[in-house]
Length: 406
Ligand code: ADP
Ligand code: ASP
Ligand code: MG
Image (cartoon, rainbow, N blue to C red; front, side, top):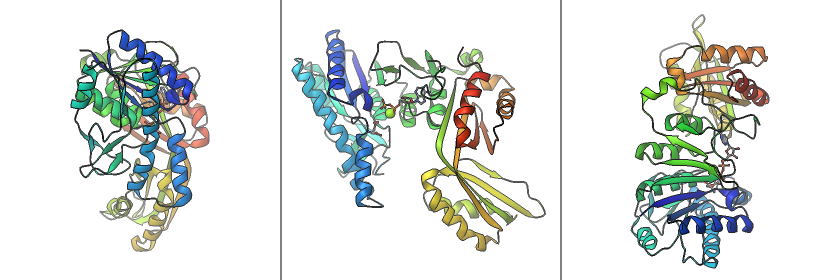
């Protein structure tokens, strides 16, 4: 029994014509002997449309009700795709996350999958059915509908593949694989035939939304054979590999460039430099449920220091308020903020065994007159914070400097 999980994203099921094309594709695979579990997203634009409706009614809609609302998008596409398969002669069955027991924790809007009961799916497969499952959704212990965070259908697909011990998980999307950077921004970007899970994890978490970060974490944990391909044209796509350290010696210096536009930067200046400053500033930010990303504390000058950090842009207003309220309490000078910044990151396991990456990166940005505001590094990545207006220019310049088009 060759179980394959195939996932189709929003654009791939964006209208009736596309749904029919996906059904044709699935019938071909089924005829070739594959037992298929298909995970689908909502039609492109639908999740955003639903969010917009909720925002017209409430400024702070309840997360629980948002999950009930957003999960409807995927319920539409599973039914339509199943109808298209019926018309082609397969007795397909559609299932919501709850119906196939995709059990999650109870953190609405970013729930984590804990368990999948695959018995019902296996029974259908054995009867020759194509099984169509709603992506992005599950249910918690009490039966409340949960969702897995934006882009979460990728994670449903990978988790499903792990639960069914599938031979492969194929993520079909609107580009024909994983590129050296977003091909919509750099037309010269090159498709990679393969990429290590470790690098893909960094690229995703640093902004490349082609795969949801959690799906790569899941794939890595359970070693799920994972491939990203186009639903519009035939091709090999990109394979995620699970190589060990030894092979990374010959790896290219840089595999890809990721970026995130929706960032903001805050600074509190002139704080008397005592032990505990970072805790006193970042504690209240964390209490406001904001995830801080890059942090920079200046070397103390005459007993005073500045602390700068970045947060998601949507959290900027609340963080600015928190920071302003700390000025008196900490006897600081003032606060500054900028919500027009972006983060750009170079990723590559080759960095481990080569030096000079940071140097070429900084030189390229300097030659292009792009100011670096903050820097953060780890073993296989270097990130810089720059003005959002300069992002595309910077990505293109670095893509060329590191010869990624070759
Ligand atoms: P889907 O709706 O199929 O889930 P997404 O929009 O979530 O598709 O992800 C695909 C998009 O990811 C592409 O259209 C592309 O613009 C973007 N993307 C960002 N970085 C990369 C990259 N390195 N390689 C390929 N695509 C990327
Ligand atoms: N429909 C959801 C979203 O737009 C989930 C997904 O497409 O993966 O984020
Ligand atoms: Mg996606």
